[in-house]
Image (cartoon, rainbow, N blue to C red):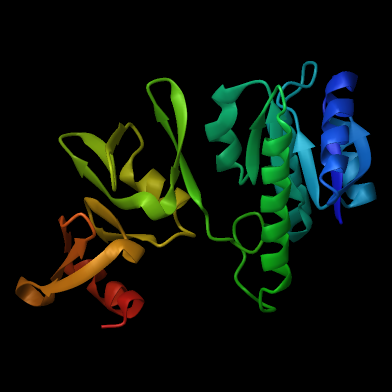
Length: 251
């Protein structure tokens, strides 16, 4: 049974979410809070597995709660699920290592999905070997599943396994998937940081590639190589990254 804390300044919203969480049969709502300091105190006191966190907290921000928890609790930080009416904060939320982002009005099926996802993440953590590497927040770095990007005033969540490669050309960064290409303003280095716990790695100053989608390795000049991805595109590997790529692909 997951222990959950709900942080929202609207009593009706807290009550509705608590009802839906209990309906899953997987969650015990151990407490509620309606402001930043109270939320921090309740987390330390109750040690929940997951915090369902609203963005707008009557003059305060749920994003600040998430930052405080990341800075002050290290590896003991609970999973964070933002539960809010505002979709424009999704990118910031995932940069704070949020586990999920659920929009109001709540749908029961969406809450069930979020709870199941948290349960799987916590189960993976329990089976992680002792001494495994920790991420910036002190938590074991789980493999990320989606990349949030800004496209036409919307936040798109791109499944990592659909991304073939990312490149910088003509002054713009392009994220290439199996079925389309996204042009974004993010620098390649910024995306590389976001994707550090994924199979997408740097292979060239202008390219990141998803190693899970590489189907062929072709030797090239000066002890370098070219990677062929599922779409048939060729991605160059520079000499700087050859040693690491050989280790990762075991060739």
